[in-house]
Image (cartoon, rainbow, N blue to C red; front, side, top):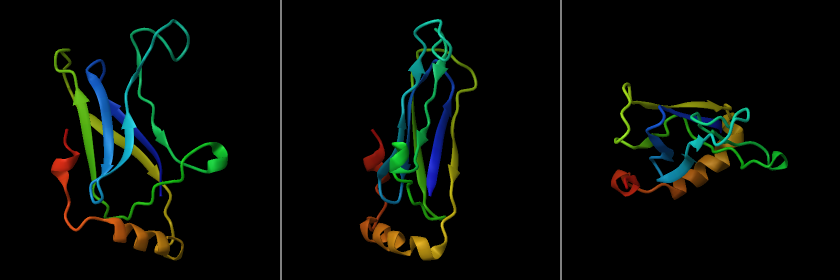
Length: 127
């Protein structure tokens, strides 16, 4: 189960990042950088924060963790402002998950397989 997905891209050109389950087309995580507006700690002008997507318990105010099988294909899309010069342009995801024993995930895996399309539709994910 996915519990943390933290995008990483270089500012100031990074506009957004999205992580999709490429097998189903489902959007897993969307991130837009938060640009600092003041001189307060963690909100400094000229700095950018990249908020991660988090999953956990409803009691913690989080969404239930996303169940991904070990062979799930993921698709990452980064949107970039190419009018701002920046060398070393890149993007990546740092993720954390919890291994779920087969007995616990059997029902969820069957349900996910029933919802999966017969063919991957990568073009539909592209904007």
